[in-house]
Length: 151
Image 1: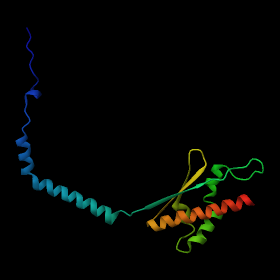
Image 2: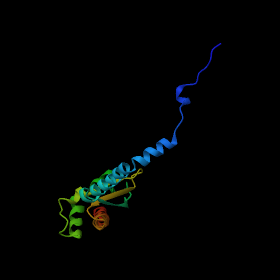
Image 3: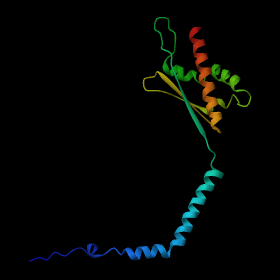
Image 4: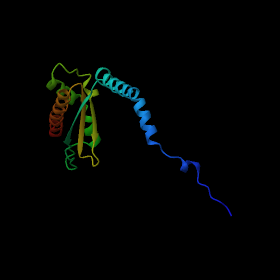
């Protein structure tokens, strides 16, 4: 006849008093480490990291007409978003505080799934500046697209 023995791990008890006693004994070390971690994270967040504000805007792409050849492909419209005519018009609207050579680097463009919408995302040092970049780009882009389709 075989006798089954329980594993030693099951025979050990969990001594809650021992663990609570250890926490109470080391409470100042635990508290000091917690406060130091919070202070370090706060210093890194406010003094070392530069915040970047991002704003997005979306415009509908005009439909291409096969009859008179008006319009571009969706990728053409996406490429047109950073064209000289759009960036020059944008520079005129924004004024001298924005350098024309830096404007293209502030934008990212993406077509939606069915290629009917173009989303522009601008990043800047302040929220107001990011909003201004997207708002002026949307106005300039739509004016330039309309002007190129009419010509």
